[in-house]
Amino acid sequence: MLRLTRYQVTGFRSVRESDWIETDAVTALIGVNESGKTNLLVPLWKLKPAKDGEIAPLADLPRSQYTELRDTSDQRVFVRADFEPDPDLVDTLVKETGLTAEHFAVVQVARMFGGGFEVRFPEAKPPRTLRNTQVLTELDAARDEIKSGTGERARRAAMLVELENGRAAAGAEMLDAPAIVLVRQALSELKNEGAAVSPLTARWSALVSKLEEMETSLGATHPDGVEAAAGAVTKRLPAFVYYSMSDTRPKIMLSGKKVAPAPVVARKAIADLVPYEGAVVGSKVDALRAALQAGTAVPPPKVMQIGTDFLVQDGNHRVCAAKLEGRADMDVEVVAKDQRFADALRHALRRGRKGFEAMTTVADDAARIAFTNAEEEDDGTFDLAASLQAKLGTEPSSGE
Image 1 (cartoon, rainbow, N blue to C red):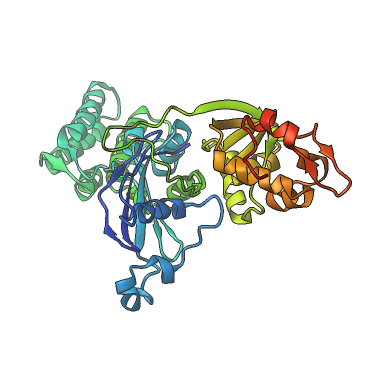
Image 2: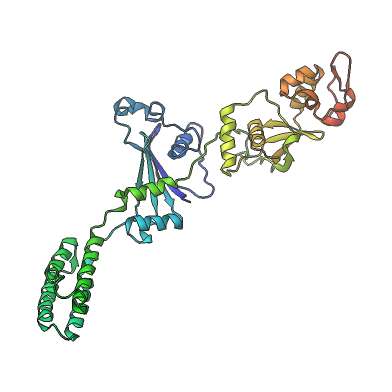
């Protein structure tokens, strides 16, 4: 699997060109409101979104340049990301390109406004020249074997002359592909002469083949231009999950006078978590489900314990997503009882079951939550006087 190491955003909404942003197992972007944090995260999501995340030039192009760029934006890159490839991908790239593994230490993927991908290999540097000593070593080895042989004296003499011509053609310290061609051409006239089973012919053919390999290696296509290599990378590109969750509760007071206490997190059965909001937003639930499926850590919902049940104060969407994913339990943050919240709940319960159902969307027996001992009067309301003190841990307010 590809592991993200850094990324850069260019020409996306309010971001002209960001620095390269280094990433790790956990990476935090910290800044004041409206400073552009979202506009740095959304492009990474749109590199390959797990769900939704369509590229919308009207919304995503820099507003001040929209008129200028709208007709030419398809090929404009808005995000580049560097990845560390896994060994399986490296093996595939080696086979597709003929290069060695060290050329694929980094894989870079970019996304364009038109939806296309651009794949590059920044560390790949196919050789374009080699030292003449590599060629001379091959020529000298062949010369020594030919000299030491017997028979076919005339052919041996001709080959030795051609080998000296080859050495002369390889006189430059560094040789490129055309220079290797000149060396090979000095030898190729004799390649197919003689009997097919002749050891002399076999040795000469092996030498010419070795020079052809050198020529091919120096003219190899850069992996940036190998379509099969790009396809192997995009096929393994991980999907990104984006979800937004607002939590404005201060964690640390900057004055240093107050530090919020560490949250109390516990594992609770989802069946014991009672929702408070009247509705949830489907798109938020879908995004959270995708996050859970991808194994992304989701902050625990905040709940207030009332008797044996836990009323969800913040995190109804997370509870809903976990339930739809078939989870039996989940981590929750148990917060202190909020007197104002308890009073509001108490007044709702005083108005009767229908009022509570309207407030919590919980119906039938579940509407009683921890108040199962409350006696129901003939007019359909609950007599809570005896149970509120025990269940809420507070005395009913006067006048109730």
